[in-house]
Image (cartoon, rainbow, N blue to C red):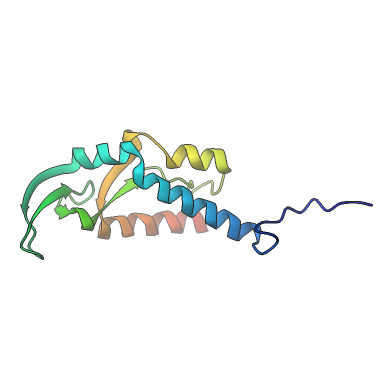
Length: 129
């Protein structure tokens, strides 16, 4: 009797795509504790000053793209070279993990509007591959 070579996930409840999405999400969550992320934030720190929205003293960070200052909630640490190459697409788990958990030279602080613009450009590039 031949056995099937199709792999199942979560007792057959998940597709391969759902499993991949789950693992990618878990890995991205783990990057929240990645030390180089905090080194990049420290390097982008400009000063503590009053947050105009709350009136409270807050750390401000410089966006690497527009060079304006923003409070922590308004910035994100971005991969200069994305974890999934926009030109080559998915290249496997090893490549994804190596690119996701990269060192400081591949990370930058962007304000949320600049990050949205950069991400949209990368998404367009991926559509073309």
